[in-house]
Length: 191
Image (cartoon, rainbow, N blue to C red; front, side):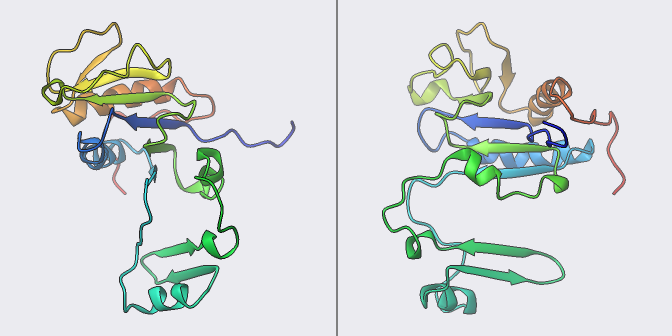
């Protein structure tokens, strides 16, 4: 279709269960990728009700009063909260594509996705053998690598979970193979 934008590259970070280090890996990857000129956005799935505002704050009070959308802005950042329970109380969990559509694709080069382990996107599995949980790789065709803090029996690329620079290098190599994506710089950016 003429004029159609290339969808942003999505790369999932998944694991079998919680408390495996997915968020820790994300927070380590983002600055390494940024130092190579890669602008990252993140979509994180929550399995429960959550708030990004605190009780007593103006935005919380406005949202609780019934506002469908609340946008708060300053010169440093802005955040938009949409209260779906007011417009669709029986709503199912959002699909990943629906959330991606909410992002401004002009602001980033890559979306890292935490959770959504059933979405059909490539992903890196965070695996800690000491936890005794099952390995998703081998059962999940979308897992393209395993980041682990111990030995893993897999034919996929095995990344050292304790070396975020090595994991970032894998992500950058993967990213260069995605259509419509500028190549990362080899030296840190000076932004």
